[in-house]
Image (tube, rainbow, N blue to C red; front, side, top):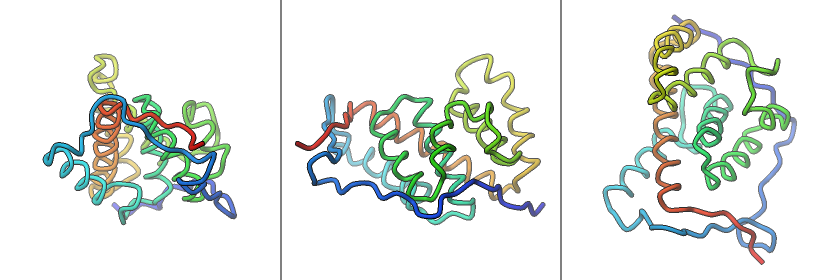
Length: 181
């Protein structure tokens, strides 16, 4: 079933994030462990990023994929991922009000039905261990399937699962953003 891609409000000129080496730019400090010290974790993260990360080429509309990544970062409270994906969302051309209200997306009129279904599915897949969420997971999948074909659903699953892996890796590392002096 061929569907029209969801419409994400965009800005005319995306804001560029500051270079990572100038004063006031963000730097990251690992407070716990460096997962790069484990080849299997490095491979897992790299493969997921290359396949479904914010620089990957997907058939799902890029702004939708970026909203899903940012929503996972919000749910999982990953400071590293929040800083990175707020900047990536702006660079993708997503309007500031859409980004700024994403944690309460259901309370806005910014999202069409397909985007709303994808956001609800993203939340359900991310929070699946919660019994209340797991009871409604099938309904979230049906809502998603009403707007996306199987190929797009599989990409959305890949984006969400990959982002959940990355948030867990960065939380395990204790990746703490801070300012370069």
